Amino acid sequence: MSAVSNDQFFASVPVFAEFEGVANTGNYRPLPEDWILALADIVGSTQAIEDGRYKDVNMAGASVISAVLNAVGKGDYPFVFGGDGALIALPASQEDAARQALAAVQAWVKEDLDLTLRAAIVPVADIRQEGLDVRVARYSASPYVTYAMFAGGGNSWAERQMKDGKYTIDPAPPGTRPDLEGLSCRWNPIAAENGEIVSIIAVPGAAGSGPEFQSLVTKIVAISSEQGRGGHPVPFDGPKLSFSMKGIDREAKATAPGHRLRQKLMIIMQLALTTLFYRLGIPFGPFDARRYKRDVAGNSDFRKFDDGLKMTIDVDRARLERIEALLEDAQRSGIARYGLHRQESALMTCFVPTPLSRDHMHFIDGASGGYAVAASKLTGKKLGAVSVTP
Image (cartoon, rainbow, N blue to C red; front, side):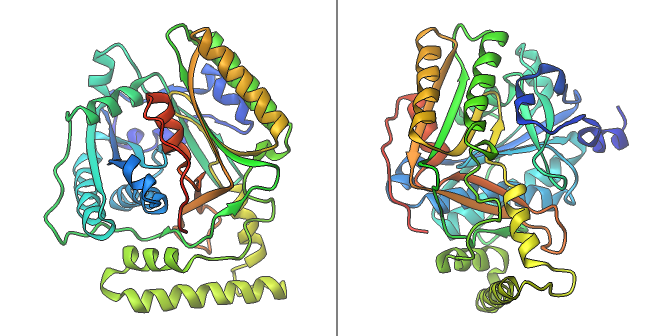
């Protein structure tokens, strides 16, 4: 496969618009043989969450996507956000750029967030030698944004290898800074409206052959869809124009380390203008604040498939009880293992190449531990609920 066709691979994957399509194996295509997986996660995220630092953890995870995509020229490559980490699939021709970006993110996360990020690059060819695969599908969250869905077991294997100390990348020297242009964490947590914000992870169990697990996924998605908009935790018209000063400070520090105060003032000015023109209901040149806020909701990745179902949804008690009953039954029968975590609000970290374009991306998680707590219940860490300072 040529370099040109490699770069165009993800664009060639057929797009499906109904989320139920994540359970359809026909929507997935195998990654090219000479591709790599660039991945990272926070070491000791359990303790950081217990210390009330989940927004820092979340931002560190999103910074992996921002840094790598910026390093490779914002190409159209598949990625997935996991709360305390992320994974990006790339052609081998982009390995050096990805390696440098991950090393720089490690240095930045340590120095600015006082967290430890481990990172690795795993060849897809090595994954296939283990009898696993990395297959990718393309889900259209809105007319402007698509997100990658992953299947085949390869991502999970790569993550286990990284945690075992294999394929790892050493941090860059102190003072090295990644390009985090577009990374944003200025929104306040988004309160539940239907009942609770619930982060769910369901992965195949020992007896979870394809059809049985696919059926479970279909049933869970169907129940959440009864809630309206699939249990989307962000209101249809977008989140309230309510912003976190700590989040603004984090963003300024990340995106303009040498000009933090100036960047902070610029962000505050942008938000003030956005609020003003939103209330007036008039556009500011090409920027329409009301349209932008609706796009924030439409472009958000509140549900995904990454070798298992991951959802952060706003659901009422009756539907949640039905979902839990399905998961419990599937776990008893060996079809699935699951982790579930309830919270009062959702958290949104964004990657916004430019607010004037409509392809801005928004990563949704639970605000009090989210996917990280749900995953801890899968592994038996029994991490409890926490309060997060926005």
